Image (cartoon, rainbow, N blue to C red; front, side, top):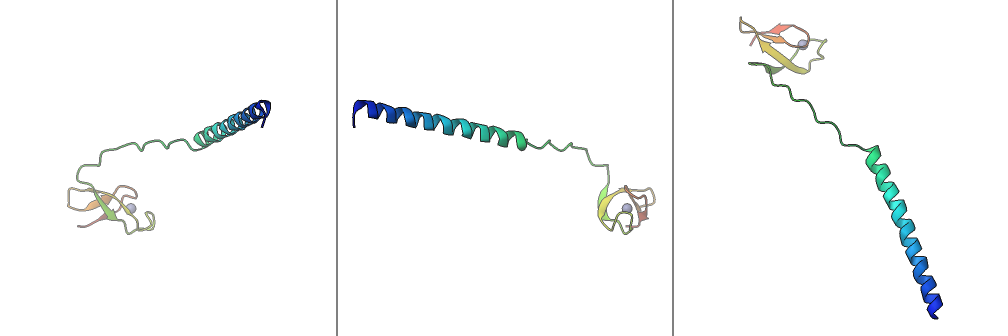
Length: 86
Ligand SMILES: [Zn+2]
């Protein structure tokens, strides 16, 4: 292989490496823009004395919701307002 052929081969592979690097950088940039980090959830302190209890109404869909204590000892659903004894 002559000196000119070797130089041509080196230039060719440098061009290939630059082309791959440019395409890889573009792909990484697209990936970073498409999938940003999610926002942090906002912390809210729990209500004093509150409990997570199953709410037996169709409004709450029998799901567990926050219930706040009432003066008579019952717990009131924070979502639908119904009370349940303890
Ligand atoms: Zn409820």
